[in-house]
Length: 224
Image 1 (spheres, rainbow, N blue to C red):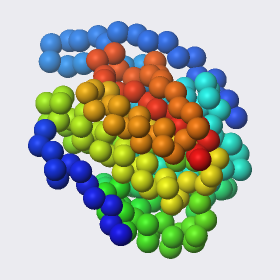
Image 2 (image 1 turned 60 degrees about the vertical axis):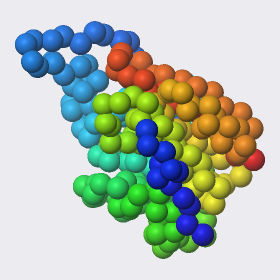
Image 3 (image 1 turned 45 degrees about the vertical axis):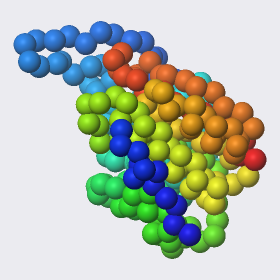
Image 4 (image 1 turned 120 degrees about the vertical axis):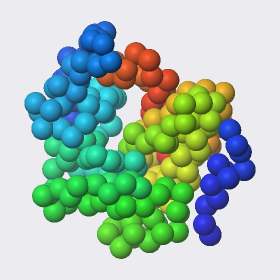
């Protein structure tokens, strides 16, 4: 049965990274690229967001060398790059509604699909991985923002609830999950969904998040 998008009903091994926050520097209408964007480009990563995952990994050590991983909302692919550096030849799948530039690694697969298209996405995942489940789900997903925080945070929560529903079928028992959410008035709706499925959870905001960002990560431990 297809999962329903509730947005239709509402209008509104540890890696050392040396994290420390610096303020942005502005010149006229331009913002000088921050340290993480510069580091990402020099290191060959596709986006600065990789340093959020690396900081989470440094703190919680969730990605193991023998893990299979699926990353939801993977574009442009920096999480996939970091995960591949750890798991090496194990299967990694990235999912995004946008097309993702292919990787040269044969074990890194991408699927262009919405997390809300549960039946289609499930079929595509099964075509790649059979009936097997994953050791870890990661996500840096975000909605297309409207400029209205009440709407944007709700959309973010709905995306993550859809990932929780996806985890029911595709995350193995005892597996872990990393979610990113815009924290607002509907945040507790997501927390309730996480607590139904996992033995424990922690919230965490990496230093690599921009100072002005409302985003926060939920680290979900030990799927029931």
